Length: 366
Image (cartoon, rainbow, N blue to C red; front, side):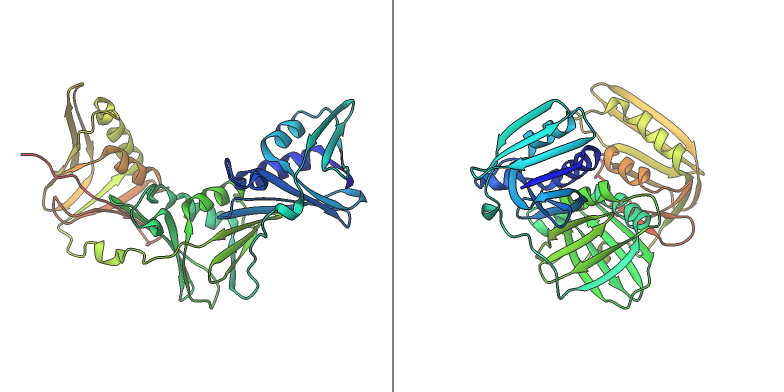
């Protein structure tokens, strides 16, 4: 292989595909980036057997070829090269020479034949949607993905597509996040994408309405985003029948300014830390929310105004879980529905149904 390419294009490509490279593997090739040149382009790929990221950049190809280079070392080198042009060549012993300006490095590569085949989706269902829409939907649900769970399916986000509505759902043992948007498609699909994959997709998505495409097969999904392809396995298993967890009998409705509620929770939580996990006591009555907490560090109390209709309620919450939900609403005001001290709190927009967050309360000791 003998190629010339632009340094900045190479830095971006190596940085992004590197997110899919295995940090430590019994197969050394998985700790590297596959680079393959042909037809005036350079193909780069990272893959850890669960997720892969690939892209192609422009290059002047003097001699086609392929090699696997250690991702960390290759990335460190290209980021520090002094000139705009990068020259990469390999010899018959898989030694790769990287030159730019007056700098030159030679590192040992691995045969591309040792790199595992990256899955593809050729016969799956597909649909498109704006990048900014999916970015918002992932961001507002990924916080509720289970980090560890006896059911691995809950470490992902469930996609549900039916009747021109796309719904993303995430759940762990203490909270649930649902985000919905209307899109134009006749497809009917349900699948679960690992949370790790969704985190990497989030980094690639833009804030523009530029479309991205998704192709879903039986075991894998491929997402095409701004010149990158993200390939991921899908999670197997039965996702929580979450509709049964959503309270239907409402005893109290609260309307409050989101920022004021967040600030009050943060102030009242100052006497809580990772070692002291006392519940945040929340009282909803007399058109106000009273937040209080007592721990070995001290005590705190805060009161904010709110519109409270129905029964007065006193509940306890994990303050971090409550903050995560409030901070992901992206609305000036929220509507909260309560169904008693031991039923989950429902957090919704004042109008519409674009999101629904549940936060499970903590039983208060009397």
